[in-house]
Length: 69
Image (cartoon, rainbow, N blue to C red):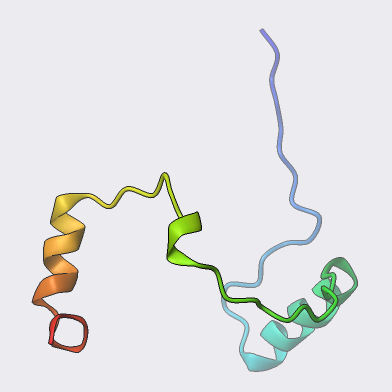
């Protein structure tokens, strides 16, 4: 049987503060790619197909005042 070990590249500092979090983010910056700015174009409702919404979700949204009224 193979013993698979998983090693994190850096230990997680669970007790660190904001400075630790900022340091973690700074180390991740080179791994994040920024997409080119693309203008969103409107999509006609007739071209949207194949999307199904469970009836429970539809009822939930219908019951919310900002969506249902």
